[in-house]
Length: 337
Image (cartoon, rainbow, N blue to C red):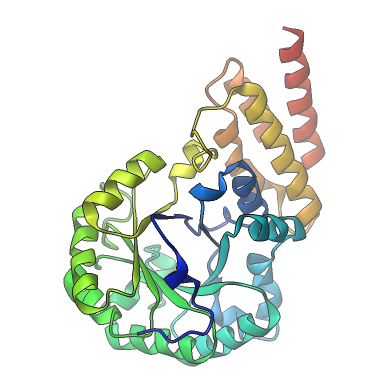
């Protein structure tokens, strides 16, 4: 059972909606964009990109990973205005480093919680024994959670999967619930399934039953193949989870957490894209490669006449100013009819 002094999880009422942590996606810039497009009642939790505890605990390596934890003043303002919680996600294998990283996060940053990645299925991470590999190392997983909990007054949560090669949902959940965890986000796939097969929300329902039996105070979010809040509401109701975390669904529609979830037109899409590029430029300047921004172009530039050509041109841009010029030119031609 968790005993944190600042445990916001226990104060969350109703269905909880979260944007998933995603590598090279959920930086402070994109989080701010999503926040600005969302209705306050439709988005409750945001997460940083996952950050290595090895990096955070190394005097030189720390400088290479700190950008993952950076929060713009403008994002921070929106978070406070809308009462949205921002959680730092960590990954690694050494409980002592989780303890040290937890202490560092608690003193040097202003996060609302710490999340431990026990779900990433990427081979280069799994080969280190980290993330979803921890499902096969249950004793180490518990040691990591409890070491993190010892280091901070912030609540500790876990994002994980149902198993490695096969579903081990009941056994794995029962094990996690013995730790000082405040919330669990369960992706309805095994490590082996990657994202190649449909998420099985029946496993989320199994997890909910285990949670209800063993530790009902722990929040449970379901994750996997959620494309809208309407769908999320049905999945949550049917599974017994407390909410849902949405990842890839945001790529189809950055307005997913908006009040009416309506598909915006070309002008709205391009104005938000322009804002995204400008904020990326101001925030990161030359410290992050502009090519990272290119993965977002398809999010905004689709579903309207001329989108394919504009997107092709944008992909050739090497600087924010070039991309903005292309967007402005398209908007001017669109206005001229």
